[in-house]
Image 1 (tube, rainbow, N blue to C red):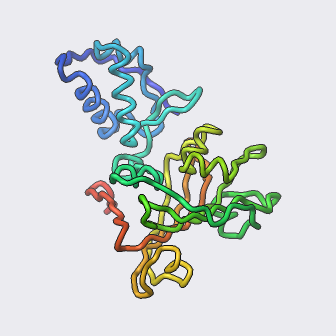
Image 2: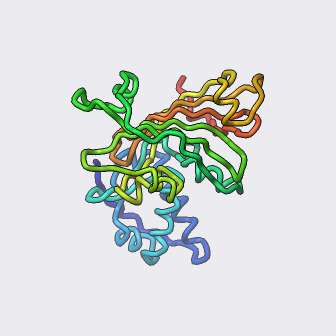
Amino acid sequence: MKTDKTNESLSLDGSRKYKQIIEIMIEKIVSGQWMADFVIPSERELAETFGVNRITVRKAIAHLKQRGYLHSAAKQGTYVLPPRSHDSHLLYSFSDDIKRNGGKPGQMVLEFNHVPVSELIRTNLQIPLSTQSILKIKRIRFSDTTPMGIQTSYVKLKPGQEITQQELEKVGSLYDLLEQKYGIEMVEAYESIGARLPSASERQHLEIAADEVVLTSSRITYSSERVPVEHVEMVYPTSRYVYQIKVSKDTFEY
């Protein structure tokens, strides 16, 4: 990763220091002064540069991490993420999604077992040929008591790592469990979206009519180490789930 230090001396208005720091740092990223993989100055250095305390700097950095501009990794510092990670590509778990919309997330585990590795899963998760099985988790996801979708996840863990159905049911979120138990933070995903009519079992689980179209999504999720950890297939009733994507001019290449 690239590293550098800033020598700017900035005078900030006392009541707007936090927002001004965010604006200045975003400008550095958007303008290319801080490019992808650039390791930003330390909290101490930024605090001296901006003439504020480290708590204010830490708060600004946390805000930019939440918006997908920055990420911190042990022994690497805080660095700039690629543009595709910013704002419109924030990665939320299903549980976070439901909470953000005012619901109470829930789940019913249908399957939790190891299965043979298919060629698709092996390719998508970069699984070596010596590994013959992978953890499969199939769940119905709820908002309060309403079934919102069916998720089938294939999770690649390192040797010696293991999660249980009881742990998942207790924590509620797969992403939260992986982060709490092994420090695996999901930060990025590549996703394809489609639509079709539901199968008989999907109609039963989701309590929908045979002619109601379902939204399908296939996602490969990456950890902060840029390692593919999860391949997940998702099915949502279009009457209950809205998929929002922010598109800007910079999204397109001409």
